[in-house]
Picture 1 (tube, helix red, strand yellow):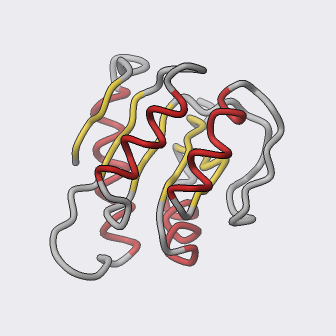
Picture 2 (tube, rainbow, N blue to C red):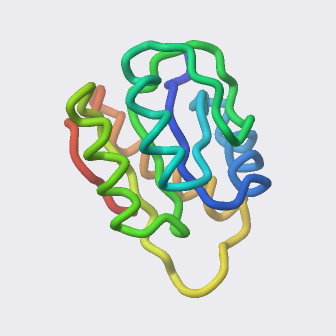
Length: 135
């Protein structure tokens, strides 16, 4: 089975990169956006199928068209809504948002496990409907 191509939005580049490595068996993180501004600027073009080099320099940049986005806890709900609003006119996808559990980021292994479990649950019957899913 081929890996599912996704976007990751997270404020901490090292953490984002480690999470991408840890979930790589099932999910290909094709693009990582580290700020609201880069998510709004880069993701709509990426969802159109354009070749977009992320400002973060992170992600596989394989050219695979992402089918979902995962948003880390450091991105606010407003950041999520801004990125989603920029992308929806181009392509509506499911967005998976981490609910922050407190100050500071959990370990990459903990986040990767939560991401993998949530995505596996939602993708078990095929591509989830567009919208926001909390985990």
